[in-house]
Length: 132
Image (cartoon, rainbow, N blue to C red; front, side):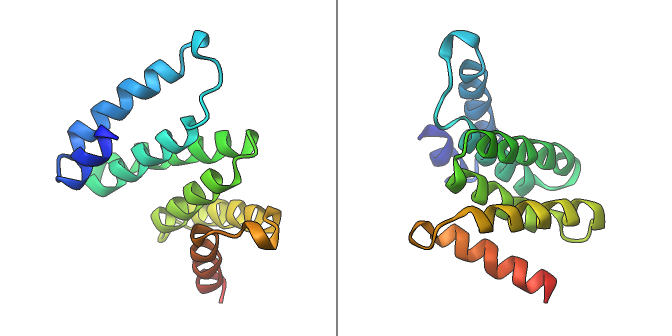
């Protein structure tokens, strides 16, 4: 994907612009339900977070939206990725961290043993570290 190439090249703002265009198309009613919509939002949130500073609040909102959308659509792998990003981003903010921890806890419990991805294990380890 073009956005990933820009991001890996350190051209984060251009990567976000590409994602914004794709997300805008995905959110048009005539497009129906785009399977990767939540993942696109998660990627955008992760990229915004990498910019730091004033972008952190928007990054949190975007990641929360990605988590909500993926959860509503029962896209557990996309949801756990968004939850993992939120856990990382929320460290130091007690209210946001509590919300991210609860979301991660809920998601972790929804995976069957044979569905557990690398992201699941990372989220579980991070949650254990935060709660340990």
